[in-house]
Image 1: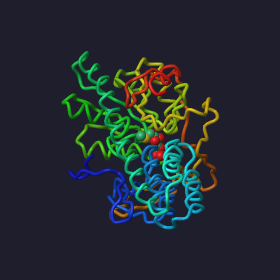
Image 2: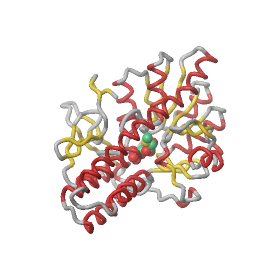
Image 3: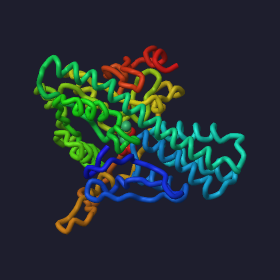
Length: 356
Ligand code: MRU
């Protein structure tokens, strides 16, 4: 998608380095950063220079390429794959991508291994782009149906950033919105700010602006009253891990939005590529939920009058804070899962029928 009218993907390989857009600096600075070693890739995932489940997976795949470039030794490659998997716990795409790379590389001669790793990492990213495009074409049908009934602008609420910046391109939740906009359907997006890291305000609103899609940032607690007032036609969010029973783990606060949507008969959709499905864990309580540094809550970042990025403390110095990054929305609150293969019920039967 576009930034300042130029098309980008979120990650690419050029001249033996991996290029990423540093998301910790958006929306105030647009910086393309080079990752040269597997440690750089791990650090980019940990510090959230790259983030969003599919992009974390793509970065981990290219992280494996960087490991092989650095030291083409099986022990080093295995150690690097373990460290990559440990770099963030909740988004399943990370393990999925590293496991896929390791499977592809097993038994390959050392003189061929780099070429094969590069090809597979690119394939993982190309596939994500293709899947996200298809998710959008499937989700478009839901938006078009609402529009055909009302002939009015369709108001869509989204949480966090499940946009193209969280994937390789198109996004998951936003892909349907981009497709609807391109088809001339009038859409407006309510963007949850998404404290503490403000992925909604800093990333979703930013990327929608760059594509000229009308959007309004709201505080995370505003969605409920908007739904009561009939100002939300549907919600679409992304997911970091989708269980085979249809439960969905996504950015903290997603669950509360689903409860409000349920209480107000607002359809609540989750958009996902099949790479976020965890076929092993059976219950939401067993998903590892990332607990991040409480400084993300107690401090806030922005630009000062000289356009310099500054971080300031906003809590009482003596207060403790707790920062859980994800929650689990039970399948019963989800109207449907929008996948690359089609839309299905959030249930084990429907998911099995679609993917197994
Ligand atoms: O902590 P983040 O910013 O990596 O969390 C991202 C999300 O929760 C997204 O909604 C999710 O990864 C789906 S992205 C297509």
